[in-house]
Image 1 (tube, rainbow, N blue to C red):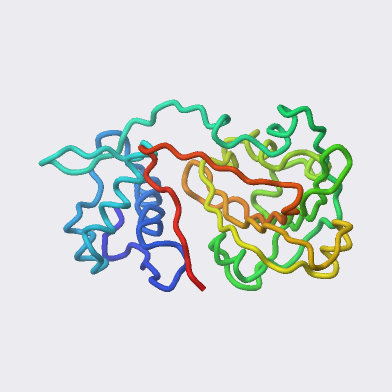
Image 2 (cartoon, rainbow, N blue to C red):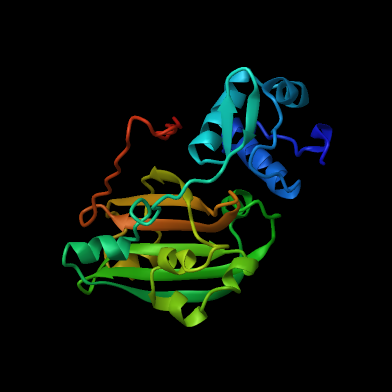
Length: 260
C-alpha cells in the first residue's frame, strides 16, 4: 500500500481549491491500492501531518467524497471506503441539445475546425497534462433553429478521443458521446463563467459585431474516478442565451467567486 509520505503534493497556487486537490489524491489512493468497501482511508491527523493543512480543508474533502459515495464516515471510528449508490446523472447533466429540444428548438452543430493541436496553457493545467501536450481540438458553431447562439471549443486527451467516433464528434452532443462509455462518462463539471471581448475570428463565426456582449463558460469535466476527461469553453451570445443553474441546500458546493 502506498505510504502517505509518497502521496502527491498539493499546490496552493493552483486554481483548484486544496480540498478538491485532496479529493483527487484520496480517490487515486483508493483506486491504486485496490481498496474495497469497508477499508479504512487516511485519517484527518495523518493528512494534517502529511500536508500541514487545516482540519477544515480535510473535512471539506471528506464531505465532498462522502457526497459522491466514495467514502463514509463513522463517528469515533474513522472514514472508510463506501458502497457506491445508484444515481441518475442524466437529469443533472443534460446536454444543451436535449434542453433545447425540450423547448421545441432544433439544435445543430457545425464543425469549424477539428484536429490535433497543442493544448492551451489553462487547458493542459486543468487536464493535469504537461505544457506542450497535444490533444484533439474541436471547434464548432452551435445553432438554434439555424441561427448561431454560441461557439464551442473542446479539447480531449488522446486517450479519450481515441475511444470516440470522429464523425459523430463533428455534429453530435459531446456530452452525450462521452456518456456512451463508462471510462469517459462525465459525473462532475467545474465551471468558470465570465465576460470577455470577442476576437475578430469569433465575431465573424457568430456573424455579430466585435462589440457584442457574450458570456464565456469554461471548465473541466471529470469521470467517475475523478479523472479529467475533457476541457471545454463555450462562448454564448448574451442577447440570445440566458444561463440558469439550480442548487439544492444539501449540495456540498455552490460554487465560488473570484475578484480581479
